[in-house]
Length: 333
Length: 126
Image (tube, rainbow over all chains, first blue to last red; front, side, top):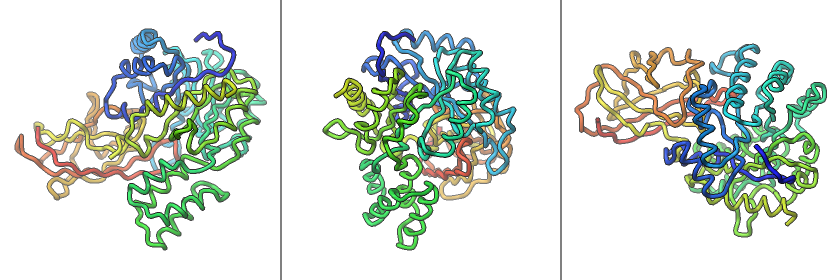
């Protein structure tokens, strides 16, 4: 990957197009070409377990085919999202540490082989195992960014523990990948509308908005809403639709990202919907992005539309509007 | 129904050598190991179907449904259908049947999460 620009780059994760992918509207090469045709690259992120049939162990043959696809589309393999799948048998103990470490190494090898410059990894990896994995990333020459995703944020104890381990290991191969869903200012209206369309009554929506703003752990708040809603006569299916907000969005201070700027190697520009004025409906980008722009971040922000969790849209127009907003703010507008 | 909620596959219902074959899709945004998938129930025309001898076929491999929980290193590619083979069931090719499928998935990186999915479709036997 080469770039002559010194400022933040914009790109896209194919996760934004989950609906079109699951509906088999595109094969991988067709989706890459569509992304390129719309000028959404060149830097892109791919979830290994979403778009690669052979993941976690990609063959040399497919890796070469993928590199050709990317070259033909004129795209850069910027980030590959990998997973920390510890609970392979529901209700039983997680897999042993050695297997989990090897599971990460398999995915790192595959990502490197396909030409990715970094991987997104997850807090489900116990922090004490990092010293067994970081040297392997260095050996492969591929960076690892842990995704700070709701309910996590800069002030979360797990982030603090990772920060301490990062200080100890002191390597440029480890960093942060902020996901702005952890500092949402409100619940997206599009998500509330989806709950309304599913039949949720306005009294349930009002209570959801109230509980979501309260302090506390997401699952506890979801439990509080459920208890209230059942007592108030709301149907479980409506409660489930309303509760989605607790699991993908948290209400923390947008300015808190300032603490993580220095070690940020990549960004997930999480979003749900763009309004007519070119602003995101739930996340305060006008406050967040200048922290990274002025803090010297020179990596890529990939637009990550997650409205597919409750809407059938294909995501393309939303991403175009989101990228325009990010470019405007990065340019100082 | 959102794409991520779909569990009856595009290939639908077909007659196979010893019974019926039902296409299934994984209701998640990414591939997951088969060990975290639990097929709860299949009903055809309102009748619950005996799954004790059922098998799951994916990408050339076949496992008894009862052993699905052991498949920790076989990944269900999120774009592809897996097929549930139900022995002992018969249906005339071309006939239409109401098929209900329900399954649970427990995403392996989110401790304690178990999602229930159900879908009912009228399918013509291929």
